[in-house]
Image (cartoon, rainbow, N blue to C red):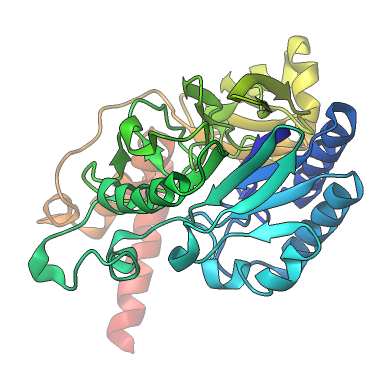
Length: 387
């Protein structure tokens, strides 16, 4: 049996305000091509299908189109919600969808009820564990009632979920098994585009929690990586931050034989529009002939001019039309650690404006500018007294 492990589609996400739905459509359509070329039987989507709990109409239409195409290509689909999804919304009509070969496993209460598939070697049980928020999941998993019993970690709730999975597997001797889970497993490397799922380290889940199954298809972290041969993150199909620039995005092609996990191979995914980070003075970036490829990339620029240039983003987009982020770092003058109140105490209006201008453009006002500002402040004070 051949499985395609993917996750973190985040349909509807943008990049610094730039719509990515067209790029998501392209890369998700490429999964359909993989299903056809590799004779994939089942596509596993390990959470964060959407980018928000209430997705837009366009986002839901894209998911509908992709699921229809995956089924038409011959693969069934098993998907679970992540921390960005609403489990109840994603699970709408789950029973009806399962009849068409799309299996949405969004209910905590039934996480130990696998989707069963059959090949020439027998049965494969696929368990979908939805994202488990400890405070909510504790009740559904029978782990206690209130705050007085102490905080629960992701390790505790996922451990309880896996205990249920292993108990069900005990009653299915010889059945091969796969688990989908959305979690931060210890030893994995995060990116800067994931949303924190907890505070203080209690989101970390040790590998041993997932003992006892043939393959663990993980979601949540956007960097593709292998924790063990049988436990992997597919990563997101697109780069969702400039910290992921240059990453080769992928899915995992998983093969099961009569004895369990036989092989896992990476499947590279296309990059509809690469991400590039540029650093330098604005005039140099606009004139450098070696940057011609970046003209078709999403661009994040760090402008190092000693004085903030006029209208830098518009000028940057004149050459790099897909520039979506710009930061002026200036000459790097040391930051003032004083509070806002301390910086204003005992200062006149002109001194405050002078410091503001120096902060914005890293250069103090010249005498002519200071005189003009002073005249304006005096006139404003006179108008205020007259009123």
